[in-house]
Image 1: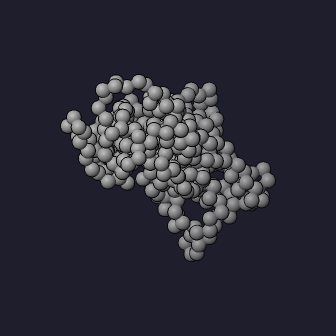
Image 2 (image 1 turned 90 degrees about the horizontal axis):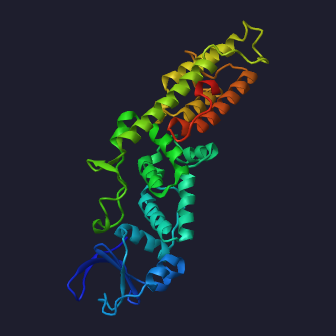
Image 3 (image 1 turned 30 degrees about the vertical axis):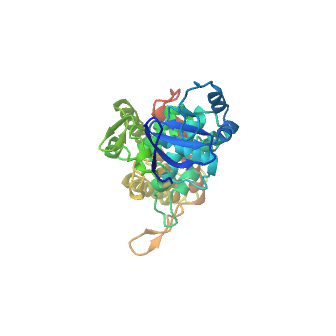
Length: 364
């Protein structure tokens, strides 16, 4: 993104400068070891905060940098570089991409700090699309993370949820946290504890700040504090208990529909056997392990409904589908749909974000 050169001031101080060094620039931003020669009017146009900063009287004997006045910003060089890129070149998120997260996070931090509303809105739209507050939005997200061959590859599209959780906590974006916690809880416990590998920065190493986006770090990985790990693992267990309760109540010995077409034949034996078959298959891949989702009640409930219409089961001779009747299919589909809505409502409860009035087992 940027080439690296050094600049030494008349007083002997040496800085690193990037491509944001315009010959006609009239203000220099000093950010730790880095400097940016840009246009005062460009920054003032988008931010009253910058306008106020530039209006503060400076000492008459202030040293100039490349013939320009300068102002020091207490930010990170990488965040400032991302912000200037957005202001000069535009900010575009055509689709979700995990590699763009550092730029999005940097622009969001500084657009929030310097009240650059149009950039802040654009970042929040992207984040709230990727970490939605509605079940419908979550289903769209999950479809996007599944390629045409049916492989679930969320880390190609979305950053690791630990990075999102930390950004949301830093900027008080509480609406992002339930989806991010749920996403994280679908990892195996060992992976949750291991933490996240920060995305590879597209910036030259000199602009990277090793202190960014971490609360604790082990072997280059960003990990959650112990209390937050407990919260995630506890929420994960709550989701699995919910699913176990659903299997026990809605699949084990499930009665047939009142309008079951097979009711006259041994009280709907064909339909009852079909529900038993679904139960066995759900238990074999609880959480969708075979599909890359380790502990995902929402997905497991979708899988259970999908079995109603699948035709790739085997009876020992040929492939076939379940012989469940239309009425029993409709009843179970409705039950699973309501359970998915309930799971979505329970997620903030499972992760300690709000209290529950109704216990999970009673809500099924």
